[in-house]
Length: 191
Image (cartoon, rainbow, N blue to C red; front, side):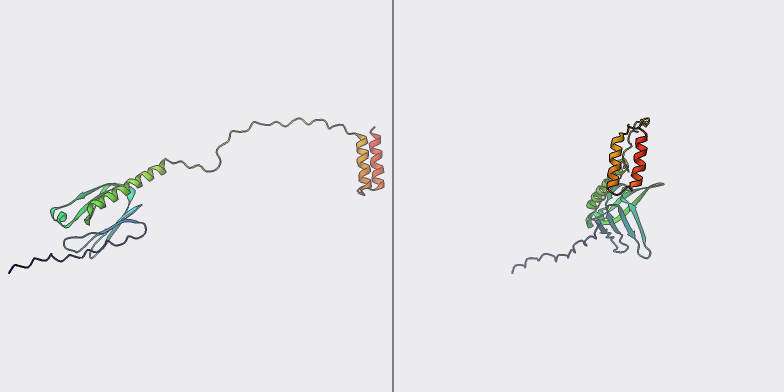
């Protein structure tokens, strides 16, 4: 009797990566060989967050614009497991710091997205620094000084026109007969 064909080994169920929160570009949980003390990492357009610890927690955040370089290191055992260490060089006020994201699944993908995001953040910062904002209206050239004209002599008054106006005011009821007579006498006295 012929031996039965060997059945393939049962497939290990692979769970899909967790859905990312809004604003998160990349997230990963380290997969250490021991299964203990896995780090949790998250990247947004502005910050890189990393958290480690079993009994105590060490959580930090780094502005992504301060990420100077990102590299990958893999040991033989990490390569066999499909994980690697992502080495993030962070510029701090007092120098550079090396942050190690340990046992990251798909480490090449992590290196690429962190590098791209850091590069985009540095370009955006450079654009902001090179942009000048002006508020208000642009400065205008001073207008030439206008000297007031010398007062001119009043135009000669036509006494006949004044008398007509005076009569119209009386007829409209604005002036009384006495006011009309007094003003008429004044105008006629100037002739």
